Length: 329
Image (tube, rainbow, N blue to C red; front, side, top):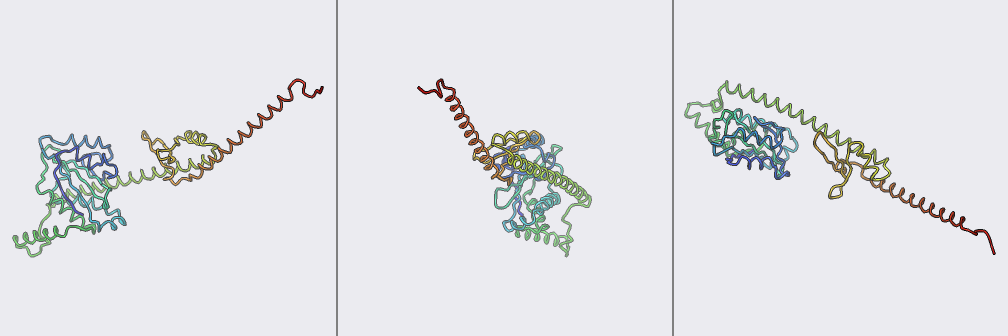
Protein backbone atom coordinates (compact mmCIF):
# COMPACT_ATOMS: atom_id res chain seq x y z
CA UNK A 1 0.00 0.00 0.00
CA UNK A 2 1.10 3.55 -0.73
CA UNK A 3 0.19 6.75 1.09
CA UNK A 4 0.24 10.27 -0.34
CA UNK A 5 -0.72 13.46 1.48
CA UNK A 6 -1.96 16.81 0.21
CA UNK A 7 -3.20 20.03 1.77
CA UNK A 8 -6.91 20.86 1.86
CA UNK A 9 -8.07 24.46 1.94
CA UNK A 10 -11.71 23.72 1.10
CA UNK A 11 -13.04 21.41 3.78
CA UNK A 12 -16.50 21.17 2.20
CA UNK A 13 -15.10 20.39 -1.26
CA UNK A 14 -12.78 17.67 0.02
CA UNK A 15 -15.51 16.14 2.18
CA UNK A 16 -17.99 16.04 -0.71
CA UNK A 17 -15.40 14.41 -2.97
CA UNK A 18 -14.12 11.88 -0.42
CA UNK A 19 -17.61 11.07 0.87
CA UNK A 20 -18.67 10.63 -2.81
CA UNK A 21 -21.86 12.64 -2.26
CA UNK A 22 -22.06 13.65 -5.93
CA UNK A 23 -20.83 10.35 -7.41
CA UNK A 24 -22.39 7.40 -5.61
CA UNK A 25 -20.49 4.98 -7.87
CA UNK A 26 -17.31 5.78 -5.90
CA UNK A 27 -18.78 4.30 -2.73
CA UNK A 28 -17.62 6.80 -0.13
CA UNK A 29 -18.16 4.22 2.63
CA UNK A 30 -16.93 5.43 6.03
CA UNK A 31 -14.60 2.86 7.61
CA UNK A 32 -13.13 4.74 10.58
CA UNK A 33 -13.43 8.08 12.42
CA UNK A 34 -12.16 9.98 15.44
CA UNK A 35 -14.32 12.62 17.12
CA UNK A 36 -16.97 12.22 14.41
CA UNK A 37 -19.96 9.83 14.63
CA UNK A 38 -19.19 7.09 12.10
CA UNK A 39 -22.78 6.08 11.37
CA UNK A 40 -24.31 9.58 11.28
CA UNK A 41 -25.52 11.22 8.07
CA UNK A 42 -23.04 13.03 5.84
CA UNK A 43 -24.55 16.38 6.85
CA UNK A 44 -24.00 15.66 10.56
CA UNK A 45 -20.43 14.45 9.96
CA UNK A 46 -19.58 17.61 8.00
CA UNK A 47 -21.13 19.75 10.73
CA UNK A 48 -18.85 18.10 13.31
CA UNK A 49 -15.77 18.78 11.17
CA UNK A 50 -16.74 22.41 10.59
CA UNK A 51 -17.33 22.88 14.31
CA UNK A 52 -13.84 21.57 15.13
CA UNK A 53 -12.11 23.49 12.32
CA UNK A 54 -10.49 26.85 13.12
CA UNK A 55 -10.84 29.61 10.53
CA UNK A 56 -7.45 31.08 11.47
CA UNK A 57 -5.66 28.19 9.74
CA UNK A 58 -5.53 28.50 5.95
CA UNK A 59 -4.92 24.78 5.48
CA UNK A 60 -8.04 23.23 7.00
CA UNK A 61 -7.05 19.59 6.72
CA UNK A 62 -4.59 17.07 5.35
CA UNK A 63 -5.99 14.60 2.82
CA UNK A 64 -4.20 11.24 2.94
CA UNK A 65 -4.87 8.76 0.12
CA UNK A 66 -4.11 5.08 0.66
CA UNK A 67 -3.91 2.93 -2.47
CA UNK A 68 -2.68 -0.60 -2.92
CA UNK A 69 -0.82 -2.14 -5.82
CA UNK A 70 -2.69 -4.00 -8.54
CA UNK A 71 -0.54 -6.97 -7.49
CA UNK A 72 -2.50 -7.09 -4.23
CA UNK A 73 -5.92 -7.19 -5.93
CA UNK A 74 -6.25 -10.98 -5.99
CA UNK A 75 -4.77 -11.33 -2.50
CA UNK A 76 -7.26 -8.87 -0.96
CA UNK A 77 -10.14 -10.37 -2.92
CA UNK A 78 -9.31 -13.77 -1.42
CA UNK A 79 -8.64 -12.33 2.06
CA UNK A 80 -10.85 -9.24 2.52
CA UNK A 81 -10.20 -9.30 6.26
CA UNK A 82 -6.67 -8.08 5.54
CA UNK A 83 -8.10 -4.75 4.37
CA UNK A 84 -9.53 -4.09 7.83
CA UNK A 85 -6.34 -5.24 9.52
CA UNK A 86 -4.32 -2.99 7.23
CA UNK A 87 -6.41 0.07 8.12
CA UNK A 88 -5.98 -0.58 11.85
CA UNK A 89 -2.25 -1.18 11.44
CA UNK A 90 -1.87 1.98 9.34
CA UNK A 91 -3.56 4.08 12.03
CA UNK A 92 -1.31 2.56 14.70
CA UNK A 93 1.80 3.18 12.58
CA UNK A 94 0.74 6.80 11.97
CA UNK A 95 0.73 7.38 15.72
CA UNK A 96 4.12 5.68 16.07
CA UNK A 97 5.44 8.05 13.42
CA UNK A 98 4.29 11.13 15.31
CA UNK A 99 0.98 11.86 13.56
CA UNK A 100 -1.37 12.84 16.38
CA UNK A 101 -4.56 10.98 15.42
CA UNK A 102 -5.81 10.90 19.02
CA UNK A 103 -6.22 14.63 19.60
CA UNK A 104 -7.62 15.70 16.21
CA UNK A 105 -10.79 14.86 14.29
CA UNK A 106 -10.50 12.71 11.18
CA UNK A 107 -12.64 10.53 8.95
CA UNK A 108 -11.62 7.77 6.51
CA UNK A 109 -13.69 6.69 3.50
CA UNK A 110 -13.29 3.73 1.13
CA UNK A 111 -13.68 4.22 -2.63
CA UNK A 112 -14.60 1.23 -4.82
CA UNK A 113 -14.88 2.82 -8.29
CA UNK A 114 -11.45 1.73 -9.56
CA UNK A 115 -9.77 -1.61 -10.19
CA UNK A 116 -8.12 -1.32 -6.78
CA UNK A 117 -10.18 -0.16 -3.82
CA UNK A 118 -8.52 2.73 -1.98
CA UNK A 119 -9.05 5.05 0.98
CA UNK A 120 -9.32 8.81 1.49
CA UNK A 121 -8.63 10.21 4.94
CA UNK A 122 -9.40 13.80 5.97
CA UNK A 123 -7.34 14.83 9.03
CA UNK A 124 -8.15 18.27 10.47
CA UNK A 125 -5.21 20.56 11.17
CA UNK A 126 -7.07 21.94 14.22
CA UNK A 127 -6.71 19.78 17.33
CA UNK A 128 -9.51 19.40 19.85
CA UNK A 129 -7.92 22.00 22.13
CA UNK A 130 -7.79 24.55 19.29
CA UNK A 131 -4.03 24.31 18.73
CA UNK A 132 -2.54 23.45 15.36
CA UNK A 133 -1.66 19.88 14.42
CA UNK A 134 2.01 19.21 13.66
CA UNK A 135 1.95 18.57 9.91
CA UNK A 136 5.69 18.75 9.31
CA UNK A 137 6.81 16.04 6.86
CA UNK A 138 3.40 14.43 7.31
CA UNK A 139 3.54 12.99 3.79
CA UNK A 140 6.76 11.12 4.56
CA UNK A 141 5.44 9.97 7.93
CA UNK A 142 2.23 8.68 6.36
CA UNK A 143 4.25 6.89 3.66
CA UNK A 144 6.38 5.19 6.34
CA UNK A 145 3.25 4.17 8.22
CA UNK A 146 1.78 2.68 5.02
CA UNK A 147 5.00 0.78 4.36
CA UNK A 148 5.10 -0.67 7.89
CA UNK A 149 1.43 -1.66 7.78
CA UNK A 150 1.94 -3.24 4.34
CA UNK A 151 4.86 -5.33 5.60
CA UNK A 152 2.77 -6.56 8.53
CA UNK A 153 0.02 -7.74 6.18
CA UNK A 154 2.13 -9.11 3.34
CA UNK A 155 1.15 -6.34 0.90
CA UNK A 156 3.32 -4.60 -1.67
CA UNK A 157 4.98 -1.28 -0.85
CA UNK A 158 7.46 1.16 -2.36
CA UNK A 159 10.85 -0.56 -2.20
CA UNK A 160 12.65 2.77 -2.60
CA UNK A 161 11.07 4.01 0.60
CA UNK A 162 12.40 1.02 2.54
CA UNK A 163 15.89 1.58 1.12
CA UNK A 164 15.83 5.21 2.24
CA UNK A 165 14.65 4.16 5.70
CA UNK A 166 17.43 1.59 5.98
CA UNK A 167 19.96 4.23 4.93
CA UNK A 168 18.60 6.58 7.61
CA UNK A 169 18.88 3.88 10.27
CA UNK A 170 22.47 3.09 9.21
CA UNK A 171 23.32 6.77 9.53
CA UNK A 172 21.81 6.88 13.02
CA UNK A 173 23.62 3.69 13.98
CA UNK A 174 26.94 5.01 12.71
CA UNK A 175 26.50 8.36 14.44
CA UNK A 176 25.64 6.71 17.76
CA UNK A 177 28.27 3.99 17.48
CA UNK A 178 25.63 1.24 17.35
CA UNK A 179 26.58 -1.87 15.42
CA UNK A 180 23.15 -3.50 15.57
CA UNK A 181 20.79 -1.40 13.48
CA UNK A 182 17.69 -3.20 14.77
CA UNK A 183 18.52 -2.10 18.30
CA UNK A 184 18.61 1.58 17.40
CA UNK A 185 15.79 3.37 19.22
CA UNK A 186 13.52 4.84 16.58
CA UNK A 187 10.11 4.59 18.28
CA UNK A 188 8.36 6.44 21.08
CA UNK A 189 8.90 6.21 24.81
CA UNK A 190 7.57 3.25 26.79
CA UNK A 191 4.92 5.50 28.29
CA UNK A 192 3.81 6.71 24.87
CA UNK A 193 3.84 3.17 23.52
CA UNK A 194 1.66 2.10 26.44
CA UNK A 195 -0.81 4.87 25.59
CA UNK A 196 -0.79 3.83 21.94
CA UNK A 197 -1.41 0.24 23.00
CA UNK A 198 -4.48 1.34 24.90
CA UNK A 199 -5.69 3.33 21.90
CA UNK A 200 -5.08 0.32 19.68
CA UNK A 201 -7.14 -1.88 22.00
CA UNK A 202 -9.88 0.74 22.05
CA UNK A 203 -9.84 0.81 18.24
CA UNK A 204 -10.08 -2.97 18.14
CA UNK A 205 -12.99 -2.90 20.60
CA UNK A 206 -14.74 -0.24 18.51
CA UNK A 207 -14.14 -2.31 15.39
CA UNK A 208 -15.57 -5.44 17.05
CA UNK A 209 -18.71 -3.52 18.00
CA UNK A 210 -18.94 -2.03 14.52
CA UNK A 211 -18.50 -5.48 12.95
CA UNK A 212 -21.22 -6.87 15.21
CA UNK A 213 -23.59 -4.04 14.24
CA UNK A 214 -22.73 -4.52 10.58
CA UNK A 215 -23.33 -8.29 10.79
CA UNK A 216 -26.66 -7.70 12.52
CA UNK A 217 -27.67 -5.17 9.87
CA UNK A 218 -26.76 -7.60 7.08
CA UNK A 219 -28.73 -10.39 8.79
CA UNK A 220 -31.79 -8.15 9.19
CA UNK A 221 -31.51 -6.97 5.59
CA UNK A 222 -31.37 -10.57 4.33
CA UNK A 223 -34.41 -11.47 6.44
CA UNK A 224 -36.34 -8.54 4.92
CA UNK A 225 -35.31 -9.55 1.41
CA UNK A 226 -36.39 -13.17 1.97
CA UNK A 227 -39.67 -12.06 3.54
CA UNK A 228 -40.48 -9.81 0.56
CA UNK A 229 -39.63 -12.60 -1.89
CA UNK A 230 -41.62 -15.28 -0.05
CA UNK A 231 -44.62 -12.99 0.48
CA UNK A 232 -44.70 -12.05 -3.20
CA UNK A 233 -44.51 -15.69 -4.34
CA UNK A 234 -47.19 -16.84 -1.86
CA UNK A 235 -49.66 -14.13 -2.86
CA UNK A 236 -48.88 -14.46 -6.57
CA UNK A 237 -49.87 -18.14 -6.47
CA UNK A 238 -53.29 -17.15 -5.11
CA UNK A 239 -53.96 -13.89 -7.00
CA UNK A 240 -56.63 -13.81 -9.73
CA UNK A 241 -55.29 -10.59 -11.30
CA UNK A 242 -52.47 -8.08 -11.02
CA UNK A 243 -54.81 -5.71 -9.18
CA UNK A 244 -55.67 -8.51 -6.77
CA UNK A 245 -51.94 -9.21 -6.27
CA UNK A 246 -51.18 -5.53 -5.69
CA UNK A 247 -54.02 -5.23 -3.15
CA UNK A 248 -52.94 -8.37 -1.30
CA UNK A 249 -49.30 -7.24 -1.11
CA UNK A 250 -50.37 -3.79 0.08
CA UNK A 251 -52.25 -5.51 2.89
CA UNK A 252 -48.94 -7.09 3.94
CA UNK A 253 -47.18 -3.71 3.93
CA UNK A 254 -45.60 -4.07 0.48
CA UNK A 255 -46.22 -1.76 -2.48
CA UNK A 256 -46.09 -3.71 -5.74
CA UNK A 257 -45.22 -1.85 -8.96
CA UNK A 258 -42.82 -1.32 -11.85
CA UNK A 259 -39.90 1.07 -12.34
CA UNK A 260 -39.09 3.15 -15.43
CA UNK A 261 -37.44 0.10 -17.05
CA UNK A 262 -40.53 -2.03 -16.35
CA UNK A 263 -38.76 -4.11 -13.71
CA UNK A 264 -41.23 -5.43 -11.15
CA UNK A 265 -40.53 -3.86 -7.76
CA UNK A 266 -41.59 -4.24 -4.13
CA UNK A 267 -41.31 -1.29 -1.74
CA UNK A 268 -41.43 -1.48 2.05
CA UNK A 269 -40.84 0.94 4.92
CA UNK A 270 -37.85 0.22 7.18
CA UNK A 271 -38.34 2.58 10.09
CA UNK A 272 -38.75 5.97 8.43
CA UNK A 273 -36.81 4.90 5.34
CA UNK A 274 -38.42 3.63 2.14
CA UNK A 275 -36.62 0.66 0.57
CA UNK A 276 -37.38 -0.58 -2.95
CA UNK A 277 -36.30 -4.02 -4.18
CA UNK A 278 -36.24 -5.30 -7.73
CA UNK A 279 -38.00 -8.66 -7.50
CA UNK A 280 -35.69 -10.08 -10.14
CA UNK A 281 -32.66 -9.29 -7.98
CA UNK A 282 -34.33 -11.03 -5.06
CA UNK A 283 -34.37 -14.15 -7.26
CA UNK A 284 -38.15 -14.19 -6.98
CA UNK A 285 -40.08 -16.49 -9.32
CA UNK A 286 -41.32 -13.91 -11.84
CA UNK A 287 -43.02 -16.59 -13.95
CA UNK A 288 -45.77 -16.42 -11.32
CA UNK A 289 -46.72 -13.01 -12.73
CA UNK A 290 -47.32 -14.63 -16.14
CA UNK A 291 -49.55 -17.17 -14.42
CA UNK A 292 -51.48 -14.35 -12.74
CA UNK A 293 -51.92 -12.68 -16.13
CA UNK A 294 -53.18 -15.96 -17.63
CA UNK A 295 -55.71 -16.37 -14.82
CA UNK A 296 -56.77 -12.76 -15.29
CA UNK A 297 -57.21 -13.27 -19.04
CA UNK A 298 -59.08 -16.55 -18.52
CA UNK A 299 -61.37 -14.86 -15.99
CA UNK A 300 -61.95 -12.00 -18.41
CA UNK A 301 -62.89 -14.41 -21.22
CA UNK A 302 -65.17 -16.38 -18.89
CA UNK A 303 -66.96 -13.17 -17.94
CA UNK A 304 -67.32 -12.19 -21.59
CA UNK A 305 -68.75 -15.64 -22.42
CA UNK A 306 -71.19 -15.39 -19.51
CA UNK A 307 -72.21 -11.91 -20.62
CA UNK A 308 -72.76 -13.18 -24.15
CA UNK A 309 -74.89 -16.08 -22.89
CA UNK A 310 -76.98 -13.74 -20.77
CA UNK A 311 -77.51 -11.46 -23.77
CA UNK A 312 -78.64 -14.37 -25.97
CA UNK A 313 -80.98 -15.59 -23.23
CA UNK A 314 -82.47 -12.10 -22.90
CA UNK A 315 -83.08 -11.93 -26.67
CA UNK A 316 -84.83 -15.34 -26.65
CA UNK A 317 -87.06 -14.27 -23.78
CA UNK A 318 -88.00 -11.04 -25.59
CA UNK A 319 -88.93 -12.99 -28.71
CA UNK A 320 -91.17 -15.28 -26.66
CA UNK A 321 -92.98 -12.29 -25.14
CA UNK A 322 -93.80 -10.64 -28.50
CA UNK A 323 -97.60 -10.20 -29.12
CA UNK A 324 -99.21 -12.77 -31.46
CA UNK A 325 -96.42 -15.26 -31.08
CA UNK A 326 -97.79 -18.78 -31.81
CA UNK A 327 -100.94 -17.59 -33.76
CA UNK A 328 -101.36 -18.05 -37.56
CA UNK A 329 -103.78 -16.35 -39.96
